[in-house]
Structures are given as C-alpha cells and as structure tokens.
Image (cartoon, rainbow, N blue to C red; front, top):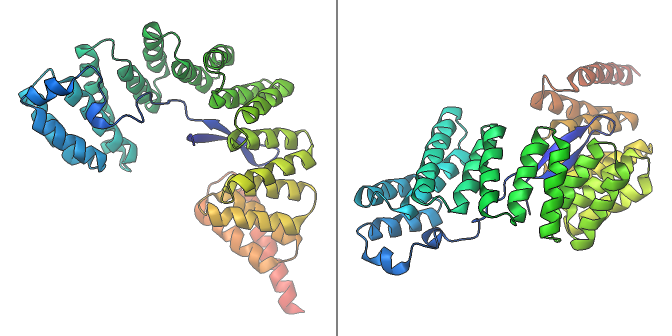
Length: 353
C-alpha cells in the first residue's frame, strides 16, 4: 500500500488521505541489476566487480553505510561506473530517509543528489535518475526543481503514467489544482487502473468544492480495486461532511473488514457515532484508534469529550492529560485545559457527595 499524508478537516476532526507524491520507477528492481544497460559480462570483467557485489549484498541487508565504503572503492577503480554511482545515490537517500538528525539527513540528501547528478551525466537517458532527483527536490520542498526534473523525464518518456502522477503531485502540493488535474487525468488515461491518481484527483475536487466529481472518482477507484481503503475512507469523509452518516458508517466498517487495525477507520467511525450522540460507541471506537495509533493527540481529545458526556470523569481526565503530554501547544490544547479544569471540579463534587 502506498504511503499517505493527511489533511485536517475542521468540521469533522478527521483527515483526507492522499498518496505520496513520488513513486519510484525502480522500487522493485534488485540493487545489483538496477542499471539494465550495465551487462553481466562487462561487470564480471571490470576491476570494480568485487566492490559492487559486496555493496549489493550490504544494500540488500539495508546496511547502507558500509555499502557506501565499497561503492567508493568501486568508483575509485572505475570512475565511470554507472551502477556504483547510482547505488551510491540510493545509499545516501536511504540513510537520509531514516535519519532523525536534521544535519545528518541534509548531508546525505545533498550527497544523494550529487551522486544521481553524476549518474545522469554518465547516462542522460537513464530515466530513474530523474525520479530520484525529483524525489529529493520534493523532500527539500524545492517544487520548481522537482517540476523541472519530472518535466525533463516526460520528454524522455511522455507516456509514463507515474511521471504524470508525480508531476501532478508537485502542482498539488502548491495548490496549482488546474495543472494537477491535467496530469492526474493524463496518468489515468495512460493507465486506467492507476487508483492512486483517482484518489488524489478526488481530493482536489473536494478542495474545489466539486463534491459530485470527487464522489465519482472515489467510486471509480473502488470499482478498480474494492480493497483500496484510501479512496474508501476519503469517500466516507465526503459523505460525513454532507451529513450522509449512514453511508459513511458503512464505508468505515467496510474498511475495517479489510484492515481491522486501521486506526483512521476507527477514528472516523467514532466521529460518526459522536455526531449522532452515541457517545458510548464513539468512546469505544476512539479507544480502538488509540490502541492502534497511540501517538496521535487529537483522538485523545475526542475520547475525553465522549467519556465526559458519559460522566466517566476519571477516564476522561486520563485521556485529557495524555493529549497535553503529546501536544501541549496543540490545536485543541485550550479546549483540553478547560475540560481538565471542569473534570477536576466534577471529581471534587463527586467526592464531596
């Protein structure tokens, strides 16, 4: 399943789900054969063969730091080694992706970018370098640069649905919706089963207040793949915003059939129950969401409010305090502080009786 990012909906305290902007064309290729024009015979005869093999094995084990040392040796022995240069970029990018230190992440992002640029200079027609450079630009929030790389790649491969999707994502990030729509539609035209493009197109239609069109493309995505929960949850959110709670609840429950541990589906189902004053079921759904995603602060607030309505003050206080631990300056922190004060007063009154 693709990665996602979430947008807050002010009315319903829920999130729309969209696919990650950059899809890697080479994601399923083994590292040792990632550059197809670098033949086995040429590799076996080259002086950098051993270093490349060692690096490939380490990369398969996700030991990217050690792999870099072997790749550096391979490049020293063969400065025009396309495979070593490209895989050097992969290693730096993977280290950056998993780093928790900002300076370390930035260093490896820059090193990855330089490696892919060198690979591109060795073979300007290697499409995967454009994907990687575009991805790095997106991580750096350099949208104009990302647009440039994906546009250049489309000159090499104008019928690539993934490239149109990624370029649409760049425009989407900048709220240039008309341009994004053009390229999402082009991606769908090229690949009618590209469900992620349907999903993101639906979110844009929602942003443009074109709910009927959004509903149409979400349904189209689900027709293509009935198990595609991103579109199902977004459609449920759309129905909930329209007050179509029964239909929304059906979609959330269906999502949980496919993914019982989907924290967002539990959260959205809780929202429907809450909107219909069924605070007991809302509290249960929020609790299920908390168990599956304990680091998301907002659900603790919703849980606390539901429990307060049920006069379960001690439990409500626990969830309120958990919210403040996770998000002391969060969007609902003032509401939670007020709720905490009210709960303490209610507890005092209960003890006084």
